[in-house]
Image 1 (cartoon, rainbow, N blue to C red):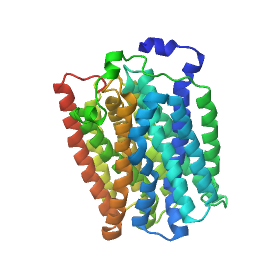
Image 2 (cartoon, rainbow, N blue to C red):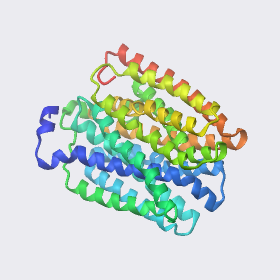
Image 3 (cartoon, rainbow, N blue to C red):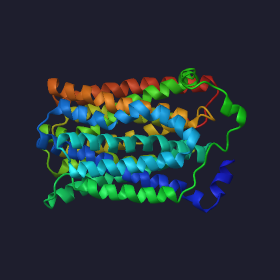
Length: 400
């Protein structure tokens, strides 16, 4: 089916983009509220930066272990069932975090289920948008990420307002669970696409992971996603503790986290509407990220750090959706499998790098962690530039 036909298809199919936006909004609320609450959890259960990194990694354990088989399952059983599993996992995880059943083990279980919902969301939202808009996947993945940015902007500010009224840090998760239930209703009303633009020969060729690893550009994009998610997750997850331990916390810590996520909104809106060559902009954003991460470690003023974290969110915003959209459309007929691979890379970066940074913080302090993240951003520049060169040599420049 052509992209024009996709856009004009019947009633419930018009809900594809609104459904993705709503689920991404709830996903953003969950992730940023969890990141904001992490310091309060550490105070209540008395653990330090190393364990904070491990708690963060629990969120992404599902993505590391199950997204490749889940992507294949989505190719077989359809996206709606996988999407329903996603929102149910988010709601269940938030209810566990709200109830705190069994103390810290219940919180970890809630983090796992909530993280599973977020991980499946990264997979299934990209898959449904790529299959609905195969000729412009990067643009629509960027548009979907706008919903996530909006939720992530609201999460810390709303959570701080709720807690300031005397509530426990866990109460905001009850409201997010209600949002997950609303997502289930929306998914049930939506009709999704399933590879209608792919011919039978394309569907038949290839051999799973062998097909993925025979595509060097796709492997490089996967590595880039690992690095990017490590940078993004560590910055956001340790931000509240970073403020508390370097400049005294206060209201600006929640504002900094909200602005970090919120300013991804305009940059992702811009990249989704931009129709020119995108890779020079992405490379420029990565260079700016290197400078901002280094500057954060040097500036001793709370307001200055807040501004730098906000600008960091602005320049990081376009990077992930373009890499994800470019990669997910690289093997027509295998969208779910490829997106599963890229989502596993997402989980590896977000799940394995934070414990390393947490240990580094325990050994060297918070400023050195930001210097290390700046170094990771420099490596990301080299990896993404290599991916672009490989795609240009192969004559595949669509989406970059």
